[in-house]
Length: 249
Image (tube, rainbow, N blue to C red; front, side, top):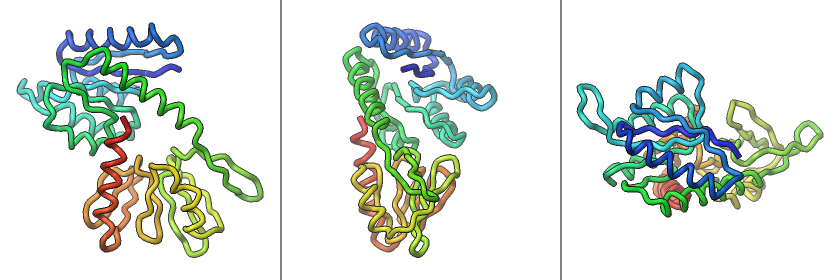
C-alpha cells in the first residue's frame, strides 16, 4: 500500500524526526510505502495542493508556525481548514506542542492530535490503527438494485440519504446518486449498523464523515448541502458526532 505523505513543520529538526519515524515504520511493515514530501511552511503545502494538483493521502502537520510578520500562531489549523475547503480528504495528523486546539481538530476531521515530543511507540500505534481501519473500510459495501442490475456501493462513498416520498435518494461523493424504491426505515436497516451513519429527523440519514459543521439549527455537509435540524435533534447528533471522532483512533 502506497501513501502520498506530506510533513509540514517550520522546524527542520521536527520534519527529520517525523520522517525517520515513518521510515522506521516502513522497515517493520514492508507492505507499506510512504512517499514523503516535506514542507517548511503551511503556505508551501497549500500552494502544492491548490496549484500543482498534489493530493496527499496523509498529512502530518504542526499547528504553531510563523504567520504574517513572523509571529507564531495557529497557522496549521487555518491551513487544515483551507485544505478541507479545497476538497482534501487526506487523513490529518496534528503534531504540536499544546493541547489547546484539540477540540478545533474535530472541525477539520483530524484523525489524531499528538503532543510533541512524539515517541516511536505512539506514532506506531496511530499508524497501526489507521491501517487497520483502512482494511476495514475496503470490506464495507452494500448492494443496491439499480435499473434491474445489482450495483456494489462503498459505504464510504455515501454522503447522505434523503426521503423523497416513497423513493429514497442516496447521494454519493462526487455528485452521483441512486434512487431506491423503499422506505427510510428499510434503508436505515441497511445503513445504521455502520457507526458512521446517523438518522437526522424522519427524512435524512447522514454519514458523519461528511459533516463539515453543525449547530442547533442545521448541518452543513462537504458537498454544500444544508440540512435543517428538527426540534430536539441537535443534542443527540452533536453527541454522536463527537463520540465518532473521539473513537476513530
